[in-house]
Amino acid sequence: MTKFTAEDKLAAVQRYLKGGESYPSIGESLGTSTSVVMNWVMQYQHHGVEGLLKKSYTSYSAQFKLDVLNYMNDHGTSPNETATIFNITSPALIRKWRMQFESQGIDALEKKKKGRPTMKKENKKSTKSTPVEGSVEALQAEIERLRMENAYFKKVECLSSKQGKITKQDKAKVVFELRSEFPVNALLKLADIPRSTYYYWVSTFNRPDKDAELKTLIQAIYHEHKGRYGYRRITNELKNKGHRVNHKKVQRLMKELGLKSIVRMKKYRSYRGDVGKTAPNILDRNFHAERPNKKWVTDITEFKLFGEKLYLSPMLDLFNGEIITYTIDSRPKFSLVKTMLDQAFERLSDEDELLIHSDQGWHYRMPQYQHALKGNNVSQSMSRKGNCHDNAVMENFFGILKSEFLYTQEFESIEQFKQELAEYIDYYNHKRIKAKLKGLSPVQYRTQTLKAA
Image: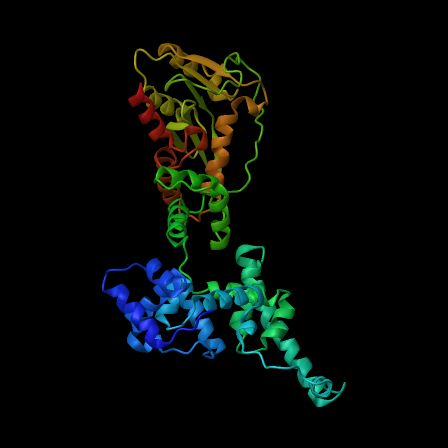
């Protein structure tokens, strides 16, 4: 390989800067590559003539090499650009340092001593580093080891309580935090991770988080819905906001953030009413409705608060799962259902042909109830005796209501409960999205469908 003096390099640079020749033509005339000439020009532009006087065999410290790699990593510069900035003669050196660091860690950047140590020195070192069993030094070493284990596992336990599984990245963070207090080698052995893995993660600690904006959005959606959303609903909500993200990535980021849906599992509870005059099961578990006000379902559920009982009677539209209306009272009297029914009928038009399905509760077998339906040209349907699955959609709503609302909050009074209930049902209708509604809330889905029609 041809060696070039500072004068040769300066002459080549001046030829290029005059504008008459290109990098390839200058390189060809000098018998060198285009990249070499380009590097000379960049060195000259950044550091002047001094940049061309740099000796090829400069000795660089491990810290300097690490600073160079961190700069390149943080600023996204190429090896050529980084070499120019730090006045390093060859970008190939930086590529070599990067490969060494990624494969063997920071130790590979240390300057190697020529030759190899004699066996005597190694024996002396090993003898010196191993204290005699039972000695003061051995006891001190054991105390230090136990102190290190205690500090390490305390931090690991704190992380596991927040996010469950501990990753190698988490272990590297713990080792990094304890590195000034305990030897890194001992910590790595305790954490059971390779040195190269540790130094790889250390190199990423100062990188800007590419998912920072997405994490902020996920947290905002999670807290807006008071922890009721899991990763699937949050994925749909992100999609509604114009962010197309894979649900698995959302699940991973939520795990990193320690976010988890607080909703409990839903359980069906059967209801056994008295046998009496009933209507046939016309609905027959066909819970699909092609338009609003085609099929409604209703039922009553009970809350126990402050030693009292409250009874909720809602009406739900099977088209979009929207709660049409509801009433609440301290007693399950007939007026609870009758008032709810009168409010719901205000939504009907003359063109609607409606079917209302319920269980066999005594309210729905009352002549007044059945006359009210007939008076509004509404067909009546009832579940089979003791079969809650015939009214599964309504049962499912009660499960969601109690899981997302009743079990997740503390109430100071009955009045506050009623106020919060009204806010939740408004939220359920207008904001809470559903996968089967194409990621829209019930009201959004109804509005969009009617517009399309």
